[in-house]
Every structure is written in C-alpha cells, then in structure tokens.
Length: 190
Image (cartoon, rainbow, N blue to C red):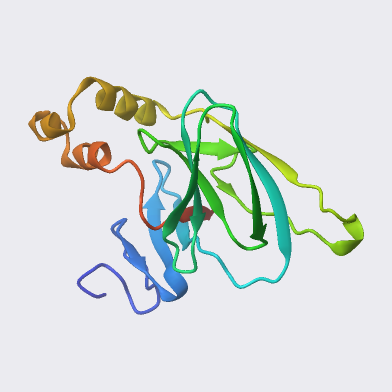
C-alpha cells in the first residue's frame, strides 16, 4: 500500500480521498454506516467534437438573473449570456456540448428539466426547415438544507466577514466560492 492509502490492485485511496485518473475522471471510495463500500466517479464535463446541430431556446422561468454557461473543450465554463427574468435566447449549438445555468448574482446552481446539466438533442434534416427550436426552461431546483444554509449566510454576512465565523474551514470555502471553474458530474458504483 502506498502512503496515500492506495494499493497496487486498487488505485483508489482507502481513506475517502479522491485521486484524478486518466481522461479527467476522479475516483473516490466511501464507506457507509452499514459497512458497504461505494465507488463514486466524478467525470469532467466538457464539450466534445460534433457535427450534429442542435437548436434550442433557453427560457428563464425564475425571478433571478441567470448566467447561461457553455462548458468548453477543456471543461471551463464560458458565460454565453445573462438572461433577466422571463427573458429567452435562441442558441445554435451541437450535440455533446453541455450547458449549465447559474444565478448571476450568487452563483447558485439552477436547473433545466430537473437536471443541473443540459445536453443538447440533435436536429436532423428530415425534421424540416427551418428547424424547430427545443424549448428549454430554466428553473430553481430543490436545494439541499446545506445549500439553503450557505445561501442564507451569504445574504446575512458580508464576504469580508466569512473568515470571522466560527464554522469549519470547508464551509468558509463554500461561502467564498459558489461554483467550480471545472465542472464534474458524479456517478455511483457499488
């Protein structure tokens, strides 16, 4: 076993730590209260090469200002446009180009079709011309209790006061950085 807890047969550390593998995939081992072990994989979200067009209309169905973010070929979020409440924008994109949505003021995640990531659906020529746009409604998700608490603290405490709070450092970090610059999606394997 190496000093990070990984053995030759299992490249994943046994202490719950994560390690980046090939192709931007992160592995993590978690052991539940019943002693069951679950492997969680975090896959880096990024655009892939594609020639299949997709025509979408993003609609802000919230009372918040929404940043529409395209994830580029390296997985870095590129802000495409900010929509005011009830505003929409037509986007010509490609299959394999993921999009995410954030509150413009707080960075909090928003969803489309109950998912945090929108994966465009392809348009084929026999669907007719001009192409019909897929309507994609941006909404507010059901936030976890932790997310609600972080949002409340952000509203009540000034940014320069976060360090003075008597809370764990990991929570202070969450308060300072609302969203990651590289985006991952988590999958579980038992």
